[in-house]
Image: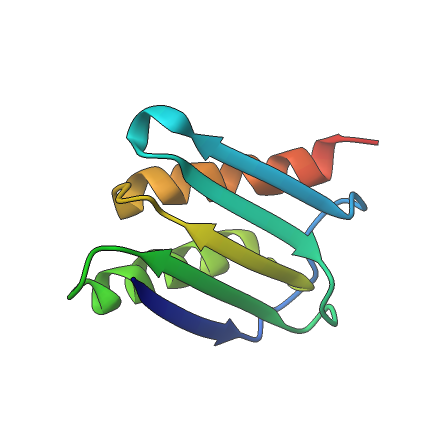
Length: 104
C-alpha cells in the first residue's frame, strides 16, 4: 500500500458548515473518501492510500486541480482509492464538498 500525503494553503475556507462527509463508489473497488472540517481555514491536508505504485505525480496534479477549483480550506481529506482512477476520485471529492455545502 502506498500512502501519499499532501498539504495545501487554499485561498479561502471550504463552503458550508457541515462537519464531515463520506462518499465512495463500491463498483470501482470500494473507493472511500472522508472529508472532515478539522483544520484551520487556511490549511488543507490530503492523505491517499492506494495499492497502485508510480502515480504520485498524477495524484499531485489531480489534487492540486481540485484545490484550485474548490479552495477546501479547513478540510482534512482521507482517500482510500481501492484502485479507482484519479479522475473518478476527483469527481467524488467534488461530490463530498457539495454535500458539506448543501446540508444544513
